[in-house]
Length: 328
Ligand code: MG
Image (cartoon, rainbow, N blue to C red; front, side, top):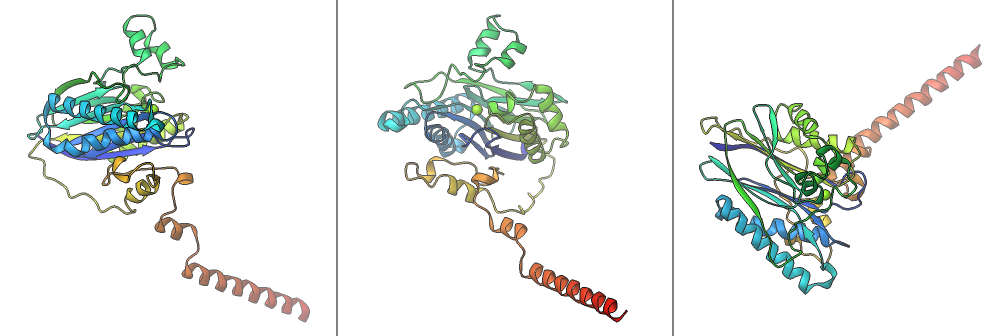
């Protein structure tokens, strides 16, 4: 078994001004972190979590390994929040997947209400259990799952990274099968879409992770986009399936956006690593225009010449018409 195609997308959504989610899409490591805290603290917490995971990612294996990584990430966020009063109380969720060297198993580590799902044989199964108030109320029979979906406190989490010096991490492994598609997402997706709608969006792209990621984000925004939405998808293939070279990206990579977004002196760039080789989407209002988009929106030299020729033709025809009228 081996990892096939993979993709990650993050989007601010329709209601939030900032994106406090972060993600990693660097095989064999995949993760989503959803930060919380005042000012930019949520972004810092999610960025620190992603950085800690990314740093040690390829050296680590198994459920124990990923659990240790998340505990280390917790320590770093906690220490930063103690040292820097502006970030006091910040925290983040994290849901991470690490594929074993032989591709046979996928280790999942999890804190908070970001989720991991597995699409296998056409059905979508939630792998993680939310550490949230409503999930606990559903578990104890106080709320039905339907009531939980509409509950005003549905985003309140009971466990987070960085809010305490230690953290309890859920860790487990899944035996992978050829054709498996793993999805990790922030609650900006799972609050907006029911599992059935997620499955439909993924199937609409024939299981292509990049197309599915775009379709999922678009569907969450179509339903209101109330929160930042982040999705990371990767497929598992039989080792015998030949590798296909990834297509050359048409657009400049997301690196420019990320650098623009992390230029604050409070936060070094290295602390907000969103995967450089994965798709990243930010709304146009917060994104500096790329060279390509300037060319698309403005008239280039060729466009101006065509416009002048057209104008000249119109003026010429008008004069001709006037001449004809005057002659009569
Ligand atoms: Mg969220």
